[in-house]
Image (cartoon, rainbow, N blue to C red; front, top):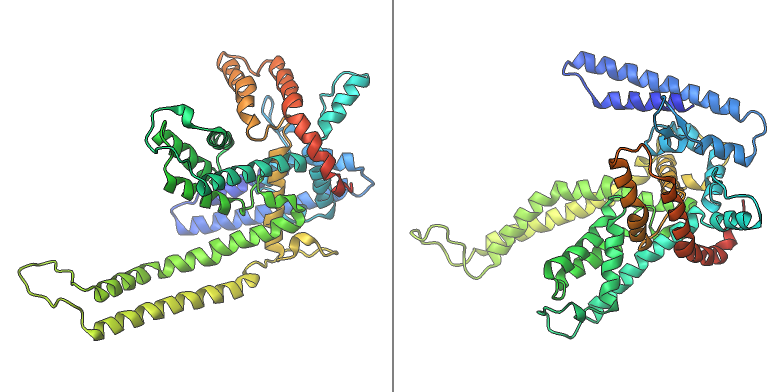
Length: 435
């Protein structure tokens, strides 16, 4: 199946490389689309053959998460990795067995092939590590997002009373250092649009250090952080709710913004800005005289004012009507020609297309939290010093892979620092373990 998905990904990339000749471009597109349809049928046939007989939960999980090198000496690739790259057909993502298996993986950590030595202590450590399920790690990430938002809000509500200009870093208290540490820790993760808020925080402190950060920049960072937690991303606190309920709604809101709100606003924005400028100039007490030689009237006539007010009102009304019409048409835009299933899936509550995007986002979140030792903020700073930096130096020295001792050290530090928090959250979070 992985070979088929890899071929499908290659065909999808061919669609982005077009020839200058119109006929050749059209002919290539037709061939690529037919090839993708043929691969989709083969993928469905392979999966149906695999699930024709009884398969345990572990076997289905292994089929989705086991790495296979596509070429000798190459990196391993998993089926879930191809799903993240949008190289899997919609029928595979909407398959009932795949849905249930992914939800099971969300609640229970993947079984590691590298288990500790046998014995009571080894089994206890393996059980201890297994508490770090993706949803438990996601809770820690979400709590870090909420904590940063709360501390910034506290800073804005109760700003420091000391002078703004100072050359002593000792004026910073635990609140300021907490903001800096969490912002730097979030910037140390892979870049997403959610990095904008911690980036603003770090810049606000760096550009004003050792004085207090810019208050307006901190206000902008707070607003950005509050908006970003509503985006469908792995660290969103809204994933505390089961993803099959929260992700479709988050994807629906995101698509409504990008499909409806943003294009309509950009379409009317130039005319509205022009009308607003003309209205502002017409209502001014003194006129804008670009040529002092000529004598202009000091005020605009009443007829011009009425014209510009009417124009501005009409454009604002058109913008409002367009937004309402677009919002009303959104349900039909979210529907697609996808094969229906024999049962009603919660993922498709807002239409098949929204459900498909929500499933892809769910798989992306699972892959994010399925690393062997995931360090949520601010512990990921510690991971960089004990594992990330030494591993990079080890590879730069000419070695193929980092030293095995680094992984052992990383696992030990994870058990000491993140493990207790994982255990605490897992004990509280046991109510939804149904698989």
